[in-house]
Image (cartoon, rainbow, N blue to C red):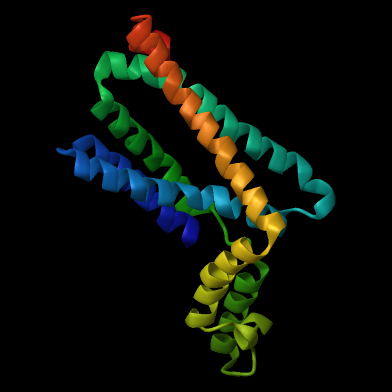
Length: 204
């Protein structure tokens, strides 16, 4: 449910960007797009944890990381030529439309991987079939309330960030490396397009 709803938002934001008429619309949609797109990056570790035993987890995780980083590197190459040829609106629209077939595949074939949710569904089916309300999954008995879940995922995380030096400095290091990466990508464009007068495709 989380992956699918995030992916729906991801597709719609791209289409909205293609049709956006002012900078405010573009900034808002880009922010929402980043939030929706980050769901896959954040949850993939937990999904692989559900799908693979520890001894078999390294290869799929390494492949996912490679593809994610390769996308960041490859995007400016094709996007520069595409933007030069058809404009940025079509570029955004094509990205949104090209995600729709993948969304259909996700909706039809992407199964739940979390053991607790799978057992909850199984217990629900058993309750319906037998009429016996004693069929419950352990997670249903221990499930935290929404207030507790939000506390654990937000307030507790911020408290750890501020009180645990290892978490704080590791977070700062990741923020710094991503800052340098995207600053570097921006500087390349400015240097070669404005200073060297290269075309947008060659700059990319």
